[in-house]
Each structure stands twice: as structure tokens, then as C-alpha cells.
Length: 295
Image (cartoon, rainbow, N blue to C red; front, side):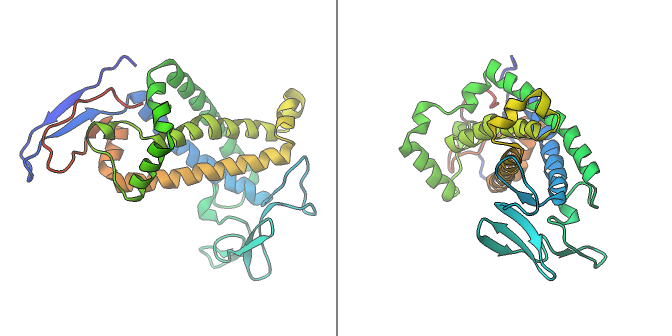
């Protein structure tokens, strides 16, 4: 964490005769945690869908069974699939609840095999995958929390008071809607929308995922019974667990879209090697001064 920012000038001739600057944007702990988490989250999401296939309904409270009212259900009739949320029912034939596999067989599981681990139905295997990678997620999250709170990362990640002013937030929203991405030194820092979303994922959704996962474990009845009570029962903990997983999936989709729009080669390279080519304003030759690497 004592690593100093490194700058490499790239003055090779270019069609626009402009000099570009390459800076060290991400330190190695950030890059390692990012890619380990990428694998971990995808395995946990896909194995979680296999576990959900065993009982594709969500309830609030202590108990949940087929005859109880579920606030969310993925099911099927003889010829169609559906997603029901409360009183709203959405047809999902061919995608959820009622779909055809590669061999032409009709399946009535909630999620198709290409979206689950394993691809064929096995609740026990899904649980083994899920619990194995849950340890990776929990240990990695705790290590990263310590790294952020003990180092300079917290200054880069947490929004400043001025950034939270409604006018500033609204300006960032408009710039994103118009696909106006920052250039120069501003491109090396997180904007307020990124900061709020990253803080929400790292310090809200991840802890909730871990705690609700523990609350669903039968062994927690004896060890940490109070944890189940905090969430209002095991079924409520299960619902919160899946809501958090959905929100993380939504975050990943938005993140990938923004990476593509901002320049995927430059963004991915910076997360693999740490080196980032600073986007320059049009008709500007001078390279900006490089700040410390972004956490």
C-alpha cells in the first residue's frame, strides 16, 4: 500500500499528434480481489439458482411450504411457464418454469440448465458449490474491508460531502445519460454514482448476503438463534438473500454496460495490469498530472 503512482509517457507518433499518458490506476490487492470475486460471484449465483430450483418460491416469516402464500413464485402449467410477484403474473414460457433442453425434452424447473451449476438437477451438488465459494466470498470480503478501512482506499471510495449535493448528483446522472465520460485527471477518480454503488455493494449487499446465508443454515438455530430473529425468520432471510443476489446481478449488468461504453480494452487492461490510458479532452495535447492509484 506504500506503492507510489507510476507514470509512463507514450510519445510515439499518432494520427492526431497528441501525447497520451498511461498511469498506474489500480493496486494489485484491488485487481486480485476483483477477479477472484468475479469468479466467486458467478459460481454462487449459478449454484444459488440450482438451490432455488428445489423450491422456486419465496416467503416472508418463519415458515414456507407449498400451501403457504409465496410473494414470489416461478412455476408452470401443463403448457406454459410463469413468474408471479404478488398479484402480478408474467408469462415466461421457454425461459423460466417451462423450457426445452438441448435434447428436445420439456422441463418444468424454474431456471434452465445453462444458468445453473450443475447444469443437471442436483440439489446436493448445488449446495456444495455454493457453500465452498461462500467461504471464498466471506474471507475475501473481510480482507478487503480491512484493506479499505486501514489504508488510503477509503478516501477514494467514500463520497465527499460536496459530491452528495443534489446539484452535483443530478449533473452526474445527466452526464451518464448522455454518455459523457470524464477525461484527464477526472477519469482517474470514481464519480459519485460509482462511489455510492460500490459502497452499497461492498458494505451493504455483501454483508447482507453473508448474514442471511448464515441465518438460513439449520446449525444457526442453536449457535446464533438471534441472527434468525433479526431477519424475521428463516424464510424472510431467504427472501432477503435472493433480493440481494438480484441487486448484485443488476449491478454487474450495469457495470459491464458502462465498461463497454467507456472503452472495454482500456478498462479491462487497467484491471489486469493496473496500467490505464488516460482519455484526453479533444484538441488537448498536455497530459494531466497523475494522482494516486485508485483503490
